[in-house]
Length: 101
Image (cartoon, rainbow, N blue to C red; front, side):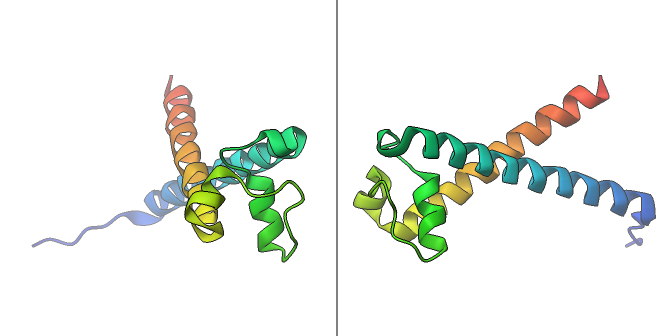
């Protein structure tokens, strides 16, 4: 079996893709929290702002979302993180595709 030599440029490219993915996922989270803050109690299914409040040790000001009531606060946190990672992944693929055009 031969050695796999990625090289420095391959590692730098992979890191830039990772940074793009993480940045877009974080941006998605910020947008989701801003929308939930504006919607308040009307964000019934999933409220990322209330998740952020729980993480910071505060009681949610708008009450529990449907996901929190059905599955618990921990599941709501996992759901928000996974949803934003999926959104970040999709947007990363779109941005990379458009950059190649």
